[in-house]
Length: 308
Image 1 (cartoon, rainbow, N blue to C red):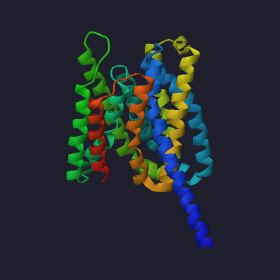
Image 2 (tube, rainbow, N blue to C red; image 1 turned 90 degrees about the vertical axis):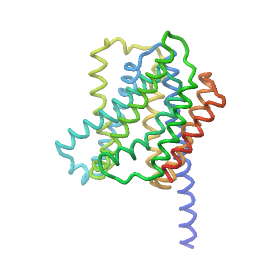
Image 3 (cartoon, rainbow, N blue to C red; image 1 turned 90 degrees about the horizontal axis):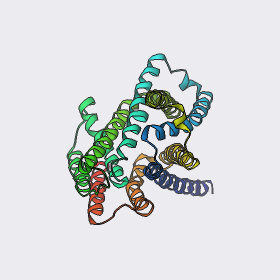
Image 4 (tube, rainbow, N blue to C red; image 1 turned 180 degrees about the horizontal axis):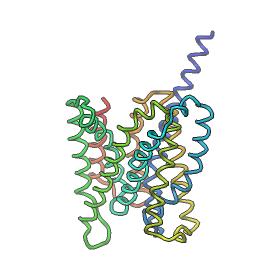
């Protein structure tokens, strides 16, 4: 009887894990849509990123306090050197990567942005080979070739709108998002040991909170305080971006990994570009035809090769 009840509980936990993985992927995929909708309201990337970070910051402070109280043995391991390193990692993963991504979206479609970002696991594999001499397999090389063939296919079929140097704008936007993916990949490979040492809650909260310092420096160097006095619609989009495409999906994804494992969670992550493309076509009116389908399939196949 107990074994039967345990089996039922395991199945329920598995179903919840699948739900968290799908929900987390879908919410993360909304990020590009929220950003594009905000740009339609005439806001620049720096101001929008500042609003997002200011809204998310109090939540991560609460999470940090909770983690310190519930995991005192992890918190006791934190030292000044860790703080400086995590400050740098927060710069790479949550400031630089986010800023480059936001800025890139001012030039390219949400579809091209999502597919370009989606290749970051391949960058992680290549950087791990460069920095840590991890073996690079044939699957990694094939994944690299097929995925970037897909991104290139969509890049050459991107339809810029407005402006004088449209083709250069597409190139600039794609390069910015590619560097965003590279910055986040470096954050991933160098953060592993600190996550193991301090736990994901403490590490992520400190890294995310520290990134606010950098965005505030950039904001006050280029803007005035009253630039934050935006319309109610922009505040709503910033809240949606901070809470529903940053905070909630980060916990959903962690819970999914806990219940169904990292491999199954990553497989569910392949739904991300599909969700973004569907929303971009329906909410933003972006084009969708055989070039977009071909690029999407190539990138999904390429990343699937890596995960295999």
